Length: 107
Image (cartoon, rainbow, N blue to C red; front, side, top):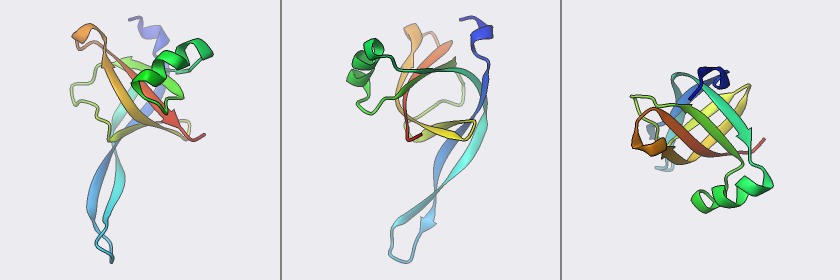
């Protein structure tokens, strides 16, 4: 993976439970885990079909370096105010060097 392609600084955030509300429902907040550098691509017609087999709401693909702290489906990536919710995590060749995320965005 060439570092020059991963030029977009973004925040990795994790959803954490903060307690419960007056109705007993859990409440959550998004905490910053760290800054990552990534490449964000819109899904083209050709790639969208295969990406949606992995995650049916996928709108974008994010490529980034492997992070030792891990990424889960409870995380999101925030870039320029747009929130990308992780729906699928691919560890390229299981080598812990590159992650390809299928994400959804409401923007």
